[in-house]
Length: 292
Image 1 (cartoon, rainbow, N blue to C red):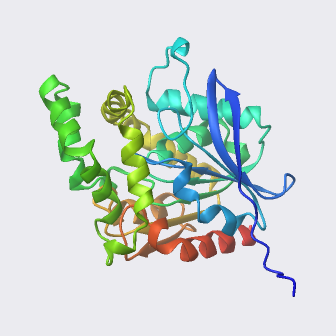
Image 2 (image 1 turned 120 degrees about the vertical axis):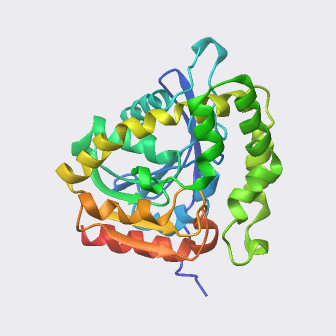
Image 3 (image 1 turned 180 degrees about the vertical axis):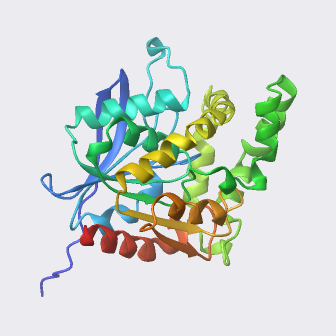
């Protein structure tokens, strides 16, 4: 008996863009509408391992690893300066290299300031926006940012070490995955274990501390991001783990201030909502994009 439920194959690929060896995952027909998935801290395209095949039956799904994350390689000779502007420039070069001139963008965590910079650069290319705990409003910044806010105000070696000791370790990484989840044991352990292992590579923690410090640059761009929402009015799904200590529900609800047609859905889970609600999120994405 043949099985009619064919699961799309996810391919592992690399391409040079902006002098960076970008690792990415891709699935779906090459001529299908594109969905670009941008991950957050401290993860990689691995976080989309379950979402990609759920979308790839109808879409060409592409998920790169940002520089400094996952399996993307930045040559030493590139002298890369890790900032959100730089990450966005690399992703812009990546989509250009692939010839992507129309795409829906899924942004999560760090993927939001990267992806929204991409939207500002190429507003006419955006066919839709999915923000899963991808903040663009100051009221969405939760109390978990307090040690990093202190680091912004006083970027001393002492405050840098405080952030390092509090966040850049296995327990800090695992906490981001399990906090706010009703059954923490249901979270696949390879998720946070892989992220924590990759953080132990030489030089990796300094990269992350530099990005923590630069995150304040994103707040200065929030008005520009919000103007994009108002001016372009892309079909928008804001789907949020409401127990996220970093990006809180007011940041989700705020999207409707600039795009009244945005669909806002709060889920009873934490920061990494895909780990617990991938079917719900996939269905909501397919419904949004299917209407548009």
